[in-house]
Length: 382
Image (cartoon, rainbow, N blue to C red; front, side, top):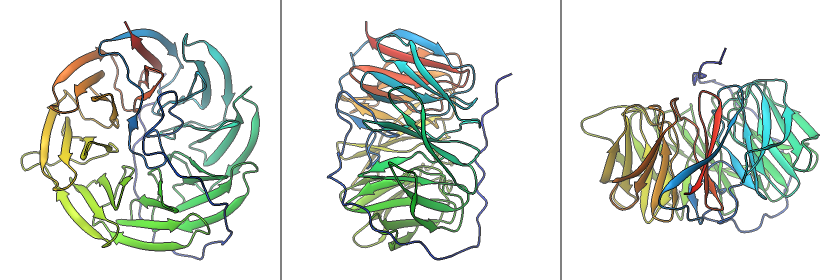
């Protein structure tokens, strides 16, 4: 029997404490968008922009499906011609991008929720609902190391230089040595760290249950500053220039001015008041995200005004990906949609027959997404 979709529970914890201090190697500059041939982490790049340099065909064809045997809430990563994705039963799968053939399977021993793989040249990293972060060899799926947090991990890991960043429902954001899994520092927030941390200019950014957006120095785990958001947040922030953007459970999308350390604008639909769980993409000065109002929203990044909306038949928790002027996004109505980025007009859709809450991954002209009936789909040129 399939496991039902896990419920996001935000229980704010009134706790605080010191953080360990250890310096990390200075990371290289970070890409704003994912390269054409790889999608190595949730949202494609450490800034979480949700943009790919790949150019899938205007009309897609289903190339293969793979039955993972359980709900797939984890969003896929793609690197070196291999798709990496977590299945709800706890398996981390490595599938051939061209054929969908299983290359290897690693069993975590716990269920996997929304934590999505992050891939480097040597390792794949993923968290599970038992609170364990796993490092696995890309070559053969053999374990490299594990790290035990205090509670479940739904946050997706982000690799920065020789460090792996990941949050946990124990309230901490962790920085671990990418090679050994040794803890370098941890920062305690006032609630579960559900969202994936964004990275920009030596800082990592996280928003969450405690209604606080934090900027933390990657070098030593010191909090640089914080901005009160006024709402708890399940979405991960996208950071571009001096602004961060994310939706909240207070039925708003926020733009934060990181220089002034204040809210720049708040967007809400005047007619439909629903939370935003989808993480935003940023492309061509627009913020694009799904809402639980069944809409995909495109918002002017400068002013916070609506540019267009597209209506699906159910809530949109899937996070959009933008590639070659098109928006790719799943919906709980069971459909994968392709929209025109400029107008929001529907260009193509595919009915998977089960809710799509995972987010698309795009690389080498392929679009990959998992569904809640346990299938992984790969699309390409007709």
